[in-house]
Length: 193
Image (cartoon, rainbow, N blue to C red; front, side):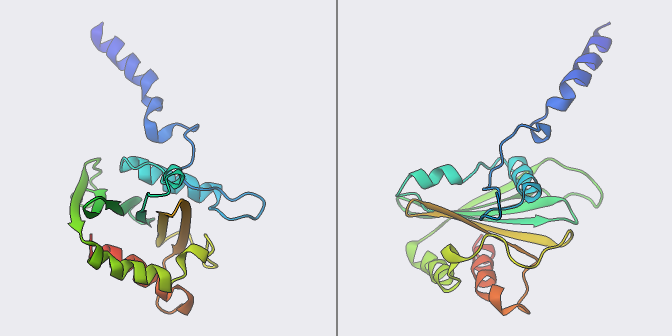
């Protein structure tokens, strides 16, 4: 009898897992009427990947003029996972955090997360700030011209001076001169994670 009750409860409660709730709000600005933002489909994918890594939206942080946070999300469509690198200004410098699924055997599903945290000084982060400025990041359109269904989306978010901005580029390449500064900015984060 107890096994039957347990199985029945699992059957009922199974659909209530956090990643399957259709009413979860997106963690990114959604494009409306041709405005700036990501498509609803990409917004759901990106939001689901962040939730899997226990990450929240950065948009509310824009209410704090002193908040300074940068987050690179690499959304891989072949492996259906994401890697997150976040750089956050703290009182004593900057904290850099890397979060990704733990790598297991090929074909083996795992829910374990790898999370590493380190410190960077302001002088080191100046290299990132210079790349961000060279990319004209805060004036870049959110979505680029190229898109695809496989490969990898590179999503860079920033909160600084009371503003939030996000830029998404699909499988950016040095073959496209318009994304080279953006690519250099993202690679800096990858190298310092």
